[in-house]
Length: 221
Image 1 (cartoon, rainbow, N blue to C red):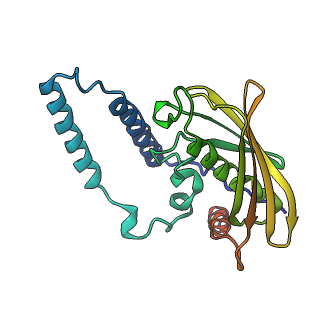
Image 2: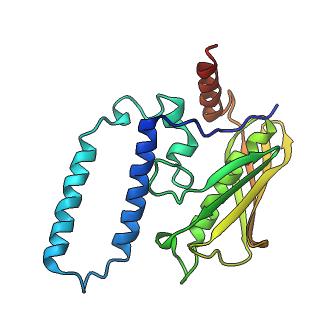
């Protein structure tokens, strides 16, 4: 039996959190591309002061760390907190994943803050995205494990500011070991290929348990 991590229907307040994360993403890009030598001193000082005020306003709000960030299936979700695919994580592009039968498909558009070589995504981010992709794709096996090994072949540069397509699936299962595959493409051309070996912990993956607990709570069982 397969299982997949899922995007949980966001509450109105969580939608606002996602919007805040998107504003921070835009802010990171704006600061990155700021021409500091050409900036007016007064305008720069005002921007610094406004950012400090905004930071204090956010810091004054309730914090999930007080009760533990894994206290609910929503806050624990890969799709909320992952630095690659977390909707609430301003570090993420984000990488958006969906399920098509036993195949996991996804897409991401990487802005300038992900740049390595000129005009291209940093290789470290290219490789890391496959860890999230294959980590989700392995769930089609019905079990789920932690990353044991991850091998990525970079066949071509991954361009910035272009929609990159992803797909992945399960190659084989042997006991607690799952071998998953993945690839990224642009306009049909393969940019990178990956293979990962995932080992299910004895007692099961905590993410799968949280997924099952959340499903049970929503169904009222």
